[in-house]
Length: 284
Image 1 (cartoon, rainbow, N blue to C red):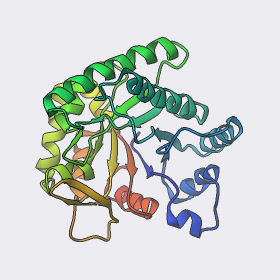
Image 2 (spheres, helix red, strand yellow):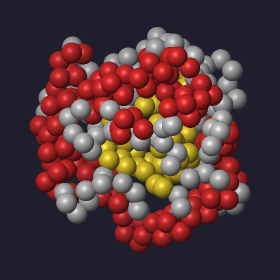
Image 3 (cartoon, rainbow, N blue to C red):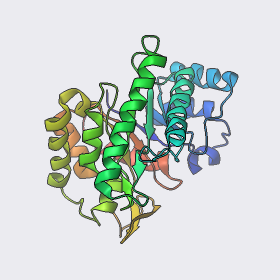
């Protein structure tokens, strides 16, 4: 099943009189949206009672929940202590999202820092393999259906280009790609325009990871302002200067009969723009 929804609580959610994340479930259901991404961007902090309330409401209304791990994960760090912290952030996010009834966690792979890109990518892959060894030891078999999604990144010095994400995801069955097409467009300097531009990415994923991971990939989407260094800031669908446009991707998803988990990350208008995205799909 193709699912579409917002990342976090949008301006429209608060404007409608709601305050608490557990209220998102009924509200999104009333709009016809079916996904929601909870951000642990600044740290994993949610009590058991709050997580249980979210689980109950989201289950009741059929909204699938995912989570974003803290933004400061970096698997290209040369410090073993810092790698263990990154592993801990993702582990904590997985435990928390499970309490909320979800199974997917998105994470930022790495940054080059002062290293050459090739060396940083190699180190990141090694440490992501360490992450998966740890998760297998701690989560299998009790939480065997978890999915962790390394995300494509939008700044030139960040690690997470399409080819890199595909290579990372080859390391373990639980690793699925998170394609942030706004980020991809940033590091391509506006090069993501046509259906064929998207097709090259999807075909590359099928070739590298097979049908299952391609069909059920994680997607982030928004228009994003960029400069020479890549990503600057997230925009809304009202922007007419920066891309990318969603319609070509929607057409390709329908053509390939994909069922990704799609999260809109527009600036404040996440739910409004998610509804626009939904309308482009013929069978949703």
